[in-house]
Amino acid sequence: MSTIVYITSSNGLGKSAFEAVTYAKKLGSDVTVVSTGLADAASLAVLGEYGAGNVLIDRSVTSDDAQQITRIIASAVEKTGANTVVFSHDLIAKSIAPRLSVRLKAGLVSGATSLPITDGGFTCSVNVFSGKAFGNVNIKTDKKIISLLPNSIQPEVTGSVCSVEDYSGNAGETRIKVLSTKKPEGEIPLTEAERVVSAGRGMKAPENWGIVEDLAKVLGAATACSRPVADIGWRPHHEHVGQTGFAIRPNLYIAAGISGAIQHLAGVNGSKVIVAINTDAEAPFFKAADYGVLGDVFEVLPRLTEALKKFNATNN
Amino acid sequence: MKILVCISKSPDTTSKIAFTDGNTKFDENGVQYIVNPYDEWYALVRALELKETLGGNVTIITVGTAGDDSVIRKALAIGADDAVRIDADPTDAYYTAAQIASYAKANGFDLVLTGKETINYNGSQVGGMIAEELDLPFVSLATKMDINGTTVTLEKEIVGGVQVVEVDLPLVVSCAKGMAEQRIPNMRGIMAARTKPLTIVPAIDVNTLTSFASYTMPAAKTACKMIDPNNMDELVALLHNEAKVI
Ligand SMILES: Cc1cc2nc3c(=O)[nH]c(=O)nc-3n(C[C@H](O)[C@H](O)[C@H](O)COP(=O)(O)OP(=O)(O)OC[C@H]3O[C@@H](n4cnc5c(N)ncnc54)[C@H](O)[C@@H]3O)c2cc1C
Ligand SMILES: Nc1ncnc2c1ncn2[C@@H]1O[C@H](COP(=O)(O)O)[C@@H](O)[C@H]1O
Image (cartoon, rainbow over all chains, first blue to last red; front, top):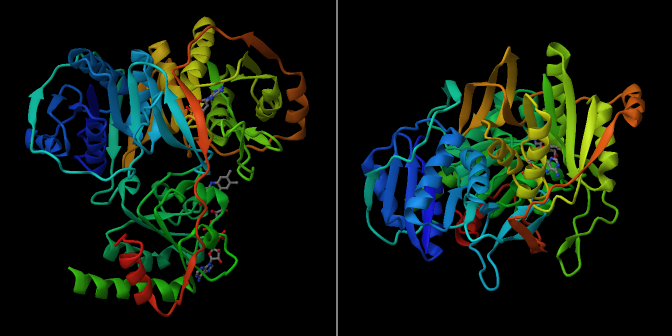
């Protein structure tokens, strides 16, 4: 069996890339990574440690044009005879994987949270109905595409660095002209973060976010917020989580001054451990949380930050 | 300017989610359907705004059964000119996309809009699949869109940021928050929606690529452990020793 993992290198190689390669390896197959972008060979070779046998990089495409990348992956599928393609379910995969599915007539599981079950079919679990249930999707075609939800499996080092080859996948012309790209520097992308500190209207005003950021800093966490907070401009839109914002599933989600409305929970209830801090004992978040603190964020957050500093000092 | 907007339904977020037939079917009993918020608030409303400034026609399309007509009428009440329902159960994303692409090819549209995703099943597949079927560029998760002649300028979400791109018509765009503001249908719109044309089109033959084998409900959460707000050392210890997340 042979599997291709597509990894864009334009954002640097992060944890989700290691997860996707680990996942492909666990499918019990030879893993070829197909990549585009500008990453240097040395950083791509690291993917071998997670199970890649080889990396093919097409440097002719440096944007995220889904049509071009689809052609490159399809050409690599033909070259290697791969029967499965794995993506990490990020914004880039969301535009490429459906195109590839049509091109290869290969069934796609979008946002898989598990390895496939293969007795009598090929079934992966996904979140459905805003995370209120799991659906088990069966891929009926011989060729299969799996887009893996970030934080669904732990990256595992099983091998050593692999070879990296330049590859030309006949990308063709692009029809999408990139005029500009804006990326805030040095922040952890929310969807990749293992820990997230999130805050809502209970913070009262945007100038109070310092204590949220302090806590995020000692935890090495990304920051997020509820929708009204983004809507009134207290926080940037890319921090908005929930049904209409980003869906995330970090290991630890700390919700400060957020009520826990069902539309908010829809984006965060896949988190492994949830801590809710709220002054209202009836706040719905306490029903979804693992740990609850009934208290004022303006007292509890600084206290928690201090406690973590103490913990870090003795444990690091 | 001919714009096609893909509309799907989704259960009202407060709906109780349950399954029947040995957990293989969604239990529709008592479920209220709404127009999928992304399709309505962002794709449809932006299409109407573009029509208002550039002229043209906005058609909405749904792959669904007769039960979906009430959801289609809701979308018509917001202001679309006419509606098409492809008469079939949209069993998988590929099946749905192939139906819409076939209709779009036969009828020629300048712009095909979808929502970012449906909140029930597919998770951002249908738009990209339509684009591949039609061999058109696809801009996903667009948060802004302006059209000047045949040139479309879009802002879209990328990992950890925003990108501005330019593409020529025709193209397929999936729409996310930021595109437009929700419009509340008024009485006149609701009345007019009753008589707007809704064409029922038979489905073409397409094989599905995937199927939902079954559903599982998540394990019930164990009760939340309450921590003394004066004792954050205890919370840190629990996160370390019990939850093992720090
Ligand atoms: C279709 C639809 C989609 C939606 N999508 C989203 C979405 O994607 N994401 C989202 O977040 N929301 C979404 N919403 C909105 C959602 O329903 C809630 O209105 C929103 O999540 C509430 O935000 P909040 O908890 O910050 O504010 P509030 O509901 O105002 O809650 C503030 C909370 O802070 C607590 N508090 C106040 N002061 C303090 C203090 N000093 N210390 C500690 N706690 C304090 C209060 O007890 C309260 O629980 C959506 C709504 C609809 C209808
Ligand atoms: N049955 C359907 N009929 C029409 N459009 C649909 C249907 N299902 C999905 N779509 C469109 O495709 C988008 C993405 O859906 P999905 O791939 O299911 O996440 C939705 O926001 C709709 O615009």
